[in-house]
Image (cartoon, rainbow, N blue to C red; front, side):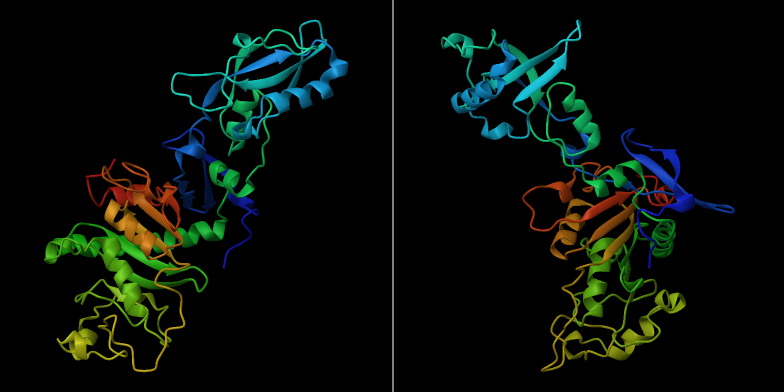
Length: 389
C-alpha cells in the first residue's frame, strides 16, 4: 500500500512543528496540495531531558594503573542502577594533556536509601593512584533519543542505542508520501461523519476505523451522546460498528452517517455506500435484536449462527483509528481494550487523554499500547468545534 518509509522522495520538505521544537514536521507537496506530517504524541521519558543526579568521581593520577583501578573501584562501589554509564571518562585539559576520571558512587541525598549511595570522603576513602573525589552530574537513566544522548554526554560518557524508527518520527520523516495521502483521505471521511453529527444536533466528532492492510474502512461512527446515551461518544460508536462487522455489536445504531463493513460483500470499498443511510437495512432486521440473524445489519454479540466461528482479529487488533477530536479518558481506555494499533486525531481537547490532559497510551502499567499522532487536518478539525486548544 505504501512506499518504503525511508524513501520520502519529494516529501522531505520540513516545516516547523506547532507545539514542540524537538519534533520536525515534514509535508508532502504536489501541485496545489500540501499535507503536513502528523505529530507523534510520545511519553515524557522520550520528550523530556534525562534527569541528572550527583555522583562522586576521582581523577586518575597514574594512567598506567587505570585498568587495575577500574577493577578495584567496581568491586568496592558496584553501580547496578547506572550500568548505562561508562566507568571512565577521558578528556583533554587546557594543556592538551589527556586526563582520566573514574566514576566512584552515587552521592547521598535526603530522599536516597540506595545502598550504593555514600560519601567516600567521610569513610577514609583511599585508592593508590586516585586523587581526591569530587562531585559531578550524570544521567540517571539511559537516553532514548539522540537529542537526550547528546545532552547526557556533555556530563559523562553513556551508552546509546539509537531507535531509527523513533528518530524518523521526531524528525517528521516517518510516513511516505503515499501514506500521508492515505491518512488525509481517512481523516476526511471522519470529518464527513462529524459534519453529519453536527447537522443532527450532536457533538461534531467523527471517527473511522481502518484496516491498513486491506486499505479499507471497517467502521464509521459519530457522536450520539445527545440521543439518550451519554456513553455514545464517536470513538465508542465506531468501535461498536467494528464489533458489528464481526458479527457482534452491542448498540442498535440507526440513521445515516454510520457504517460497518459487511462480511463477504464486494461493495465494502464503495465510499458512496459507506456513507449511505443504513436505516432501510436495519428496518428489515426488525426491532427485536435478540432475533436478529447474522446477515442483518443490526447485530448483537450473541447473533452468530450455531457452529459458526469468527476467524478474524479480535475487535480492532491491527486497525487504525481516525478521529476528528482527541479522545477522552473513557474512549482512550476503550481503545486499549479493543486493541487498536494506531490513533490519528485532529484537534486537541482540554480534557483529552492522548496528549493534552493525560497521556494514557504511555502509561507503563496498561496491558496494550498503541501509537498516537495528532494534528491531522488540524485546521479543518478545529473548525468543527470552538472547544479546542
